[in-house]
Length: 142
Image 1: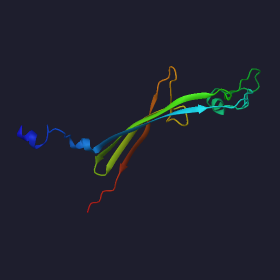
Image 2: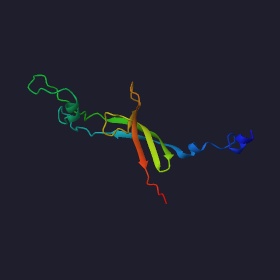
Image 3: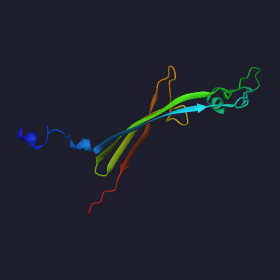
Image 4: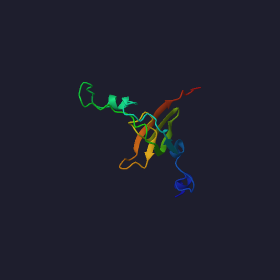
């Protein structure tokens, strides 16, 4: 018991030395986004072509009689809530060597993947690795 007390095994309010070298952090952002279009704004079919849908979908045969070129819906107002949440860990692993890892919500099909829509039916949040890093600091020897 004396050894446990001397080495601080069960001292209230203390924790192991390795735990002081780990830092857990996080942040969360919510926002409301509205895309409101004026009346008579590009509502003729085919005026705004969705090139991303063409590039990621099956090839188009423009010679066929029933070609349907994908277009953007540019006359329907959109209102949605957005969420970005991230949690990360930084660790000082050894003298001069640090590492970090961060996990965040997002949509891997979007170029701005950090945002997720709140309230979409039958669609869960996607967790992605947002950051992974390691760093070796120069250690002076004398």
